[in-house]
Length: 330
Image (cartoon, rainbow, N blue to C red; front, side):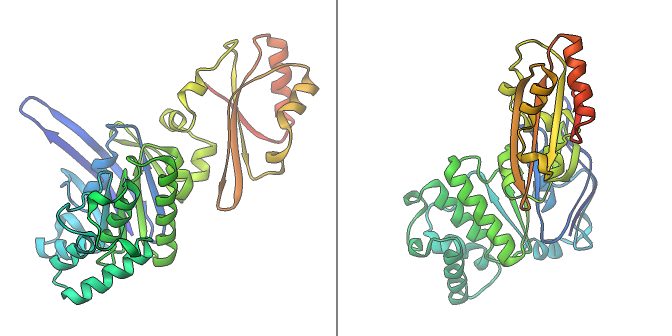
């Protein structure tokens, strides 16, 4: 289990201090895929680098399996880091080494015999679907293949935890889905706890169990992915879930209502058509989306009520008796 307690990170320059993390508290349970999402500059990459102390916190604690990393002697810290693999947006492969030698690199550092290291590398190449590319060099690989090699290298020492810092940001949508599915498979087959850093909600909702939304160095919201997706409480979460171009669509400027569906029968009903027909009043659908989480269909939509006050109140009254979850957007 990973625990962050009142974690802080401040960068100091000659003229000012920059607060990257301010009082971060979160718990990542063994075996889950935990997402951390935020806009650029929010502090998410600094946060993940503090987990393995690539960035040393200026305050608070990083506790892994009951051990406070900031209090460990250097030798013990280096040993514990073997339990934490990491992959990056830029892959960070060694260009002068072929695929097999790239995967063997952390094993060489750990003092593993060459023969054993190569056997481990071949096992991992099979796991990531690159059995036939062991002798290839990074320059001969596609972006998706490079990330698969990076994943194999990160798993070489059989880590308990895998940190993914914007691991799919440089990939096209189809390759992104393939890499995310591979990470999900690794989580299920090997039981590796995975921490995913991203600025894209599509990454979170595809593979994550839980999510923390970070904004301006603070945790703005945290919970199960389905809960945050259908009922975002913070402005930043709503901004990340609902595309800005969708929020901008407005014909009348009327009151806005968010309707959520959490696996109820109404998820598959022609709900809006029924409401409009029975109320005799039009609405403007600004945004709508449905997703499957853990085999259950969840969805939400944002509608804009007509400017006519009587028509708007008809719809509000109808919603109150409809049995669906809804609330007015502020």
